[in-house]
Amino acid sequence: MISRATYETALFQFLAPLAPLFEDPKVTEIILNGPTSIFVERAGRLSPASIQLSRDDLLGALRVVAQYVGRRLDETHPILEAHLPGGARLEAVLDPVALDGPCVAIRKHQGHLLTPEDLVKNGALSEEALEFLRGLIHRKKNLLVSGGTGSGKTSLLRTFAEMSSSEERIVVLEDARELRLQKGHVVSLETRPPDAEGLGGLTMADLFRATLRLRPDRIVMGEVRGGEALDLIQAMNSGHGGCLSTLHASSPSGALRRLETLASSSEVHLSPLALRSQVAHAVDWIVQTERLEGGRRGVTEIARVRGVDDAGNFVTEAHFVRSSAGLFRAGDGEDSP
Image (cartoon, rainbow, N blue to C red; front, side):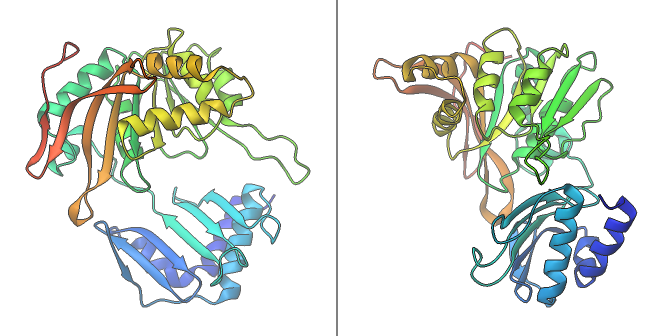
């Protein structure tokens, strides 16, 4: 294992041409479609950058990252997921899988942590919707933040967790540390990939099972990706209220179906009917978020999970929906704060 100082020096020597992009606070993402085709995202919009890397420097940077985080990167293991110094998230795919050369996406860490007031100011939420969500969080309802890549799920999750009571003991589970909650009683756990011999790996499911014995008042899972979904569902159903997490889906009902699919990949097998019933009873509310026109990110729907109908379909009820004029209440609900 190389030292952190050596790692950072070597990495930024290889990536020196990208330094202005890392330093520009308006740049939120750097995308390399090969070493000579580089794009940047500013305010939700992509534009080409007049910067190029050599293929050797790009590969050198990726190998340094892989070595530091203890992961293999070669033709048999062509995908790398890691975090860079400062918190930027990196996803890389090597050729020949990436046909035009190494493809890399770097999502920069947001230095300014969004406050609830920021979400209202930038139009992601309305004041009424914010107070509604604050009430759900204080009453420890189980919330999922659903949306596509780059739709603002992590920022919303962080904001919701920050709105929890200062008296709560929060256990945070992540594949790589992103949330960095500014709360007084937080335990942060991180998964770990296996070493070159395939040993020592810790999955999200491993962490979750340990978490249940750490006396959490609230469990925050950065993203549900696999079989740990069943552990999360069963925790929600067994008295662990106030669970917060994110997952990729395009609608509230789609989020429930995806959660069911992920849970079915667990080593514990339940009948489809039993699993669907558990999902419907576990999740209380779903906050759907999307990229809006102009590149902004915002909540498009806040929906309550009502259960499963006679045909076996998930039933959700929208309480807030977005129109061209903004996010407004769709109707009064009995669970309104």
